[in-house]
Length: 117
Length: 110
Image 1: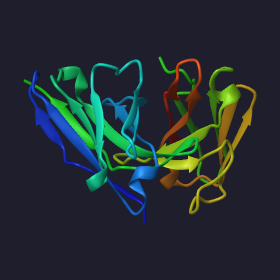
Image 2 (image 1 turned 60 degrees about the vertical axis):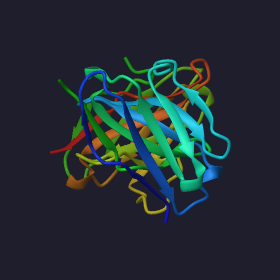
Image 3 (image 1 turned 90 degrees about the horizontal axis):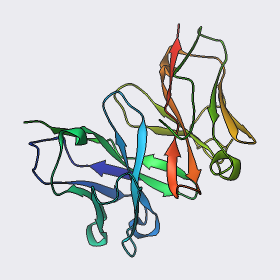
């Protein structure tokens, strides 16, 4: 069974750094692209970027380029999304999802990030 | 402002049929496959329709998808209260080199 299990909710202060994770199981982790999607409170879905864990090839949405870093450790089937300096506007739910051809077929349960002083 | 345009809300009675539209352009829907996702309250999105009109295993045939030109439509028949959710369309945009979503449509089953 394909599963994407994300790390737990985080509460951080502005300016702090953060790295959240997404662990894949039940499939060949290195053979599928993984995406990160942001959902701000009460808002829609926004694609942030994508990584191919097989070789760590990474692409970013222009809206998020330079704002976050996406990485992966294929030895432990885990992808990461990190911030070096959080802002209040980063408060959102973050989802990872697997890309299958033209669609996102499996999604993680989400990680809620709250940034507040 | 989302690249793909969906109505903010739709509603219908139990047992009835509803359609949700998703409008785009030649750089996205016009040249790419469309997917639909269902997001039940407080949960992660779930794939409902892919490649315009295909259903993943386990999705009932009450859900259907179609595409014509630069627009796509999700249809739901035999509405149930459990269908109350937000529905999102999504596709690849070749001009933006980005995956894009509609703003979402909230379905209320009255």
